[in-house]
Length: 319
Figure 1: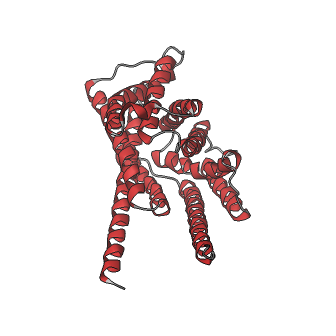
Figure 2: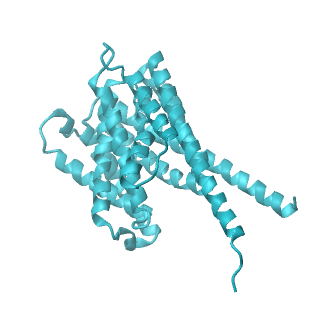
Figure 3: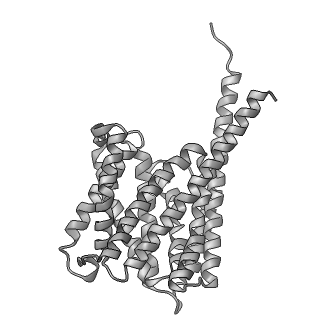
């Protein structure tokens, strides 16, 4: 192997390591954001938290949009899909935050890990992707893991535990919509429209009856926490882009599951929460299923690349 090849290999490894570091920091920031949300749900309505957090995020999203191409980022040739995606963010965040007062943080994280399984099922319907028997079996196993955590039909089952499942479904739909929009809208444009839609829907929701929609003016300390939520959310968004820029998705995606570690740590430190055995067992099943899906997808992509290369090399020259 030549010196130039050794240098290229070393640089590639360094980029992958840097991508992994970004991924770990991204998951940490996301975990901090959700931990702050759980803390604030004890005193504030879900709508108030979402509204104030996204109001703080709005100037950051505008600056990001202006620095990455300006007003042209607001354009999309699929406006209805963009509007649907932007609106869904409110419901994804709201359903997850609504579960946090009623269950341990780590348990909510573990249930939400079912999102990639929903994505696999939805990709068949909306993206016309083919899913073989192996992936179907893995998806089914993952949903069994959810049932292990939820334990329906037992005294430990609570309705609130379904909320992270709903949030995971909404998140999966968001991922499908994002993939459909990737050639029709920019990342900064989707971020800004999503923030605008979330602020708008949350503002309208304040007129609805019920404690979940009541407006509560934050105190000075809690206002700082909400500002912190906006800061770590924006940082997590940036780190996500950087992670996938420096390393392949198959390398980055498994680190999403380190969120469970942070959930256990934050839950124990701030709320004296200790996950029960069935939660850890169910989480292990869901995580194993998710990792296997990542492995299968990575292998399928590598095979496709190799087949294309083989086809190119076997094509006889013309002329």
